[in-house]
Every structure is written in structure tokens, then in C-alpha cells.
Amino acid sequence: MTKPWFAAAATILAASMIGIAMLNTTTVSAQNNAAAPNNGAQPLTVNFGSADGKTWLVGYLFMPAQPRAQRSPAVVMMHGRAGPYSLNVKNKGPYNASTLSKRHKMWGQSWSALGYIAVLVDSFSPRGYPGGFGQHTYDDRPDAVNEVTVRPLDAYGALGYLRSRTDVADDRIGLQGWSNGGSATLVSAATDAPGISNPTPATGFRAALVFYAGCGLHQRYDAKGYMPYTKVLEFHGMADEETKYWRCQRLVNRSRSMGGDITLKLYPGASHSFDDPGRQKVPANAAATADAIASSEALFEQILAQGMPPR
Image (cartoon, rainbow, N blue to C red; front, top):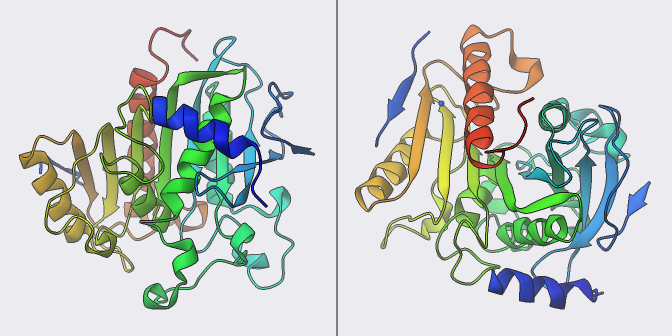
């Protein structure tokens, strides 16, 4: 059922990287504002509308124990093809804040410890696929969760939700996505992103972090090339067994030749999901994770938290 929030959100949105090769190439409604900090505990569950105008999404809100300011910078997080939940509950549930994957909890808690408000968007459960999808299912996934045409609308729904909160600095919101969610993040950061008209860093996302995305993007940018409206930093392991780094290399090189503000950091020997806590025994993954975390934090500190008290 469409919620009243959609109309307001539509109005707001319309108005508004061993070696490293760096290539130049509780439910809370959407109307609620401040929520108590969770002090690194289980995130809060929130609900808000997708910019598709019909889907009521589930989000998991990581609140800082010590906010950066009265209005904090914020991050929208987009999960990959396996969904936001632990593989231990993939086929049976429960699907809730207590069963989020270790990777997503790590990143959400990391952002909140730095004074950011972070929301992890569950795009799959509201559309009937809470357990996500397995490897090698790309061609069999329903269009209802398409990472090019549908999931960017969820990213913009989350942007609108965060902007509705009185504890969020509405011009300091970044976007982060992994794998399938990384693909959605790339499209969300493009000048032709679904869910927003004529986007700029002021009206859309101030910066975006993309982890091991599938960069084919359903051939959306094969003819015209990819152009982001905001700064994009992309990370990819060169031993990725699911998504091909060279596709992203090609996309990024072409974009940069057109003037796009996008950078790809490649990690030799690192796998897909290299930042998963369960994959850190692989030295290349551990090295990639350390660098990607440091690079991500540095970028968001520079762009989202500029002028705010350091943490």
C-alpha cells in the first residue's frame, strides 16, 4: 500500500582499493525523528518508502552513541545479492536486526562509532525474497529486485527518510553498496539515476563507496558511457570469483576519460566479499579490508564530516 510519505519524498528528491594498484583509469516510522543511540548494540528497525511509490521498505538504523553534531552525517548502505542477513538463516529466518550478517553489522557499527547515522536497506524482504539469492543466479533473479532499475529507487527512498530526520545533516549523506548493492550504488550515483531528477551532490548523495560490484549493469552504459554526478570510490579484488574486476576497470577508465569523478582501487589476490569478517584469514583479503576501510573513512570524513568535530 502506498504511504503518504511517497509524495513528499518525490517532491524533496526532485527539488533537490601485498600491492595495491590505484587506477586513474523497536520499529520506527519514517515520520519519526531523533531516536536514542544504540551504543553499538542491535540496530533499530525502521520503515520507509521506496521512491518506486509502492514498496514499504525495512531498514536497520545504527545510531551513534556520541553524535558528531546536533545534525550528524549519514550513510545509506545497500546489501548484496545474498541479502542483509546471515547465511545461517538464509532459508528459514528469522529475518530481523538480530540476524544481520557480520559484515553489515561491522560496517554499521563502524560508521556509528565515528559519529555517523547509518541505515542498512533491506530491498529483498519486502518483495518476497528475504533469503536473497545464491551464486550464479544472476540470470534467474526476478526483475522486481533489479539492481539497475529498481534498487536505486530504494537508495533514494532511504535518502528521503534520512532527510526527514531532525538529527541528520541533510546535505551530508553518503551511499555505500556491496556486490549487487554496489551495482545499485553505481547506478544511483549516475547522472541518469532512477528516483531523482537532475541530481547533484547537493540534491542527491555527496559521495559513494562501491565494493566489488558487477559492472555490466545490464548494458545500461555500453553505448553512452557511465557518468557519475558525485564522487565515487570503487574497490575490487583481482581474484574475485563472482564479479570481474576488468569490467569495472573498463567502466571506470571510460568514465574518467569523459570527466567522471570516479576511482577504482584494485587488490591483487583479494576475493569477492574480501571485507567479510569470515574471510580475513586470507592475507590478501585482510590487507584489502584494512585499506578499503581506511580509504572509505577518509573519503567520508573529507566530504561528509568536513568542519565537524573529529572523532
